[in-house]
View 1 (tube, helix red, strand yellow):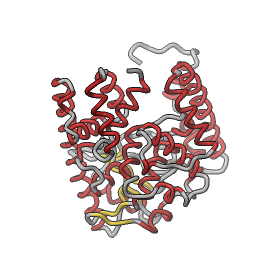
View 2 (cartoon, rainbow, N blue to C red):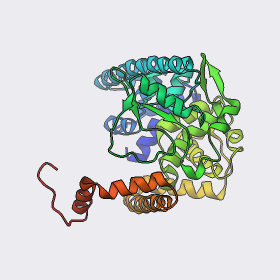
View 3 (spheres, rainbow, N blue to C red):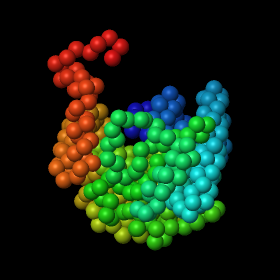
View 4 (cartoon, rainbow, N blue to C red):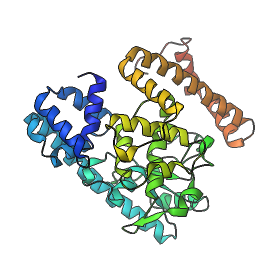
Length: 370
């Protein structure tokens, strides 16, 4: 199995609990085809869907087709993730009550929000990093103060903090499983006016007494987190963890209705949905608006899947281009904003930073163990 075949196999397996057509196709493939399970493990772990893969295969009663040692390993990892997610849910509820006690209502986002609302049949399916929530501009500094007083501290203590647009520096607390991100924005500055707190609060919902976004906005954010915040739109690739969330949310919200609210964001959203439709096997709930852009996007997506050399070349060029643009943006902002200007000055005055750059440029040799 090459990478493309493995990716599509894993993706279809993620849908077999809800899509009968894919369940039948996967069972035939398991019975008649030699599956490269090492490749499946590599791809599913790389995309953070290994537990979700196990849960779907188990629900479909397909574990009988897998090697016994692999089933044992998958169960072990999934059980560990379930325990972790139970602790994350407990921590999130603790934070929720703490903030409510101070008359602040958090709106939980992404993986933690999905867990709290019960999006997954088994909480072990989702691999979660941080606990993310967003607040109004007025409550944002209050939330930081409340968590700081509750002994949450910065994960990385810097001599000087980079001016954060979307969220405060990641926080953690002793004996708590997850780091926390306090958001005031959902997107990078370029798109923040189109999708923000004021936009999502209008149809926010409460599930199990917890505030989360509407299903349409959750679906959009699942894509935006990859396409915009992580530059996925530029690299024409897919993240199955995000795509799996999109698949599940597409059963609760109409994708075309969700995207119709946007202008500049509509095309990146629609393009990601297009490759979800391809990878998951033409599922009706993932139907997208076919445009010239989506056709070109899908063609490039397939090209990169099958031509590693082309993908690496384009990825390296785009990475350098984005790096330069972001650095130029910081310099431009420093001309007009004091916080950026202060950060730039402290950065270039930092002896360790100067040494690091001299080594990168080949002017200075690294010292042993540096």
